[in-house]
Length: 122
Image 1 (cartoon, rainbow, N blue to C red):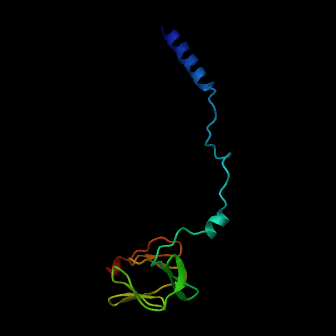
Image 2: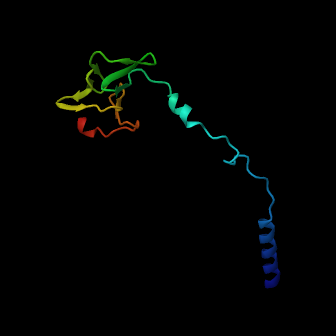
Image 3: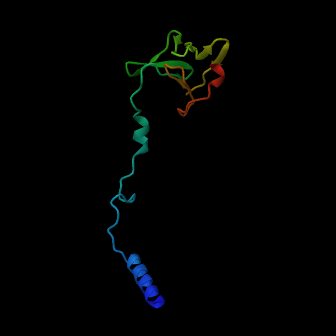
């Protein structure tokens, strides 16, 4: 009985190993590579009120396009963003560095677009 069970197990294993299934159609070698140079040049839709420091100037998105900031903007959380890049709330101030961003809700983001820890401001 043990020999029969052993032979059946070996036969099942052999059949499983010889399974000739069709290759997956989602094979990464057949998919065309994305051109990262054009993706980087075409940013996602810009949200109005997004502000950034670029070449020492504060820029803001108005109607989907970048425009120079000419006055202080107050965010929904109370932070004030001056045209020189100074962000303040109460007695705390911070000067934005080139590439940093802040949205209309007052969330600061680093040069890579990752939210920054602003827990000391609230």
